[in-house]
Each structure stands twice: as structure tokens, then as C-alpha cells.
Length: 278
Image (cartoon, rainbow, N blue to C red):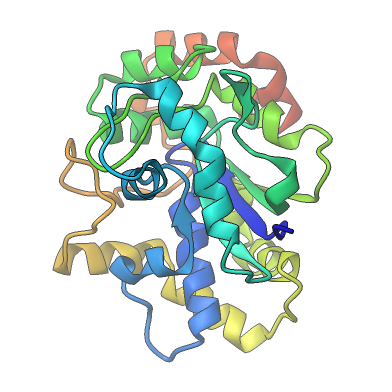
């Protein structure tokens, strides 16, 4: 019998997923020096890595055959849990929904999930930089029910939907526990929020270790490392992965039209999570 060992680390792109993975890498390694940004991937695997799909397909396949990649997904995820570990951390930007009649996040393989959300007004500028599009275009995409990323370089396609649909899909009542974090709370009270992450894995919280791990994954530290070595997860469209990492900068960066478009497209969910009246 396959273990339900996957702990999903889920978010819309540019919402703090890498930050949480960096924190976990540092907490688990418990070293006196920060874990290298290019070692973070060893502490969890992505769910859209082309090589894993090629392995279960038995060789190369047409990357543009998106339906085929979705059909292979179940075997890829089964391969992840086949190691019989109690916990397999899997990063995803996929919506928690069905595509081509296949559930992207199968409950029978899932132990739990951590979902990180970020104010879409702040996320949209990072999103635009990361995908090499204008902020106006990014705003349109994150409000679109069929938003996603096609297959590119070493990744298969990702299905995200609109920001609101994505949040709703992961915060609805699910058959496994979900820890919901807001990026803004992680910035404002890292000790409180990151302690929740440790507890989610059933580990005791060691205050000294917690403080050190938070320091080792701080934005300044990640940025410093990136200035010395290229980050393997950086996108081809931008020379930096870690740019600002603040909250509230949208007030200076976004045009009134973009703010209006995003608010109109995401009103209910923004209100529910405290992103409306800033």
C-alpha cells in the first residue's frame, strides 16, 4: 500500500514558497551557517520537474502534449511516495482541482499541506518580473480562471487558475490538515508563523534553533547569497530572484487601473483574508 506521505508546500507563484523551503532547510540542517540557496531543493521536490515525468514515461515525450503530462502525474507522485518515508515535502503552484478529469492533488497520497498566500497587489509585480511580462498583463493573468504556465525548459505545465480560485481551492475543507500562512504575517511575526511550520511536521519547537533558522533564511541573507552565486531557480527573464520581499510596496508601484482590476477580480477572497482595506 502506498503511503500518504506528501506534505504539499503550495502557493501561487511569488508568494513565499521559496522562503518557507529555505526556512525548513535551515531548521532541519540545524547548522551554524546558512544552507546554500542552491541546496534548498534537496529538502523537497517540485511536482512539475520534467525529468521525473520522462522517467515514468520511459523516455522523452512531447512537452506540448499537456494532457499526457497530466496523465503521467499520478505515476510521478506515486514514485515520490515509493521511498516509504513518513514525510515527502513537495512544492506546488498547482490549483487543488481536477484537470482532464484527473485530480492534481490526490488525497490518497497526501498527508497534509502548508498553503502560503500573499496580497495579490504585492505579488503581481514579482510575478510580472518572474515571467517577463508587463504588470498590466500579469494583473490580467492572475484574475483569469485559466491562468497557468505552459511547459518550459525543465518543467511540465502548471495549472493555477485565478489567484482567488487558487486560494479557495487550498483553503476549502479538505480531507487532510492544511496550515494556512499569510506572507505578511511571516514578515511581521516570523517567530510565531515559522513555529507553526515546525509544529505542522510534528517536530518540537526549539526557540534557539528557530531564531537561527529564521535569520539564516532572511531576505537579506538570501539576497546576499544570490549576489555571490547564481540561484538555480531564477527565471530567464530576470537577473535576480530575490528582489524586494516586502509588503505594501504596491502603493508606490501599481497604477490605479491595475489596482482596480485586481480588486475587482478578487474582491471576496481579498476581503476574507484582510487584503482589501490596506
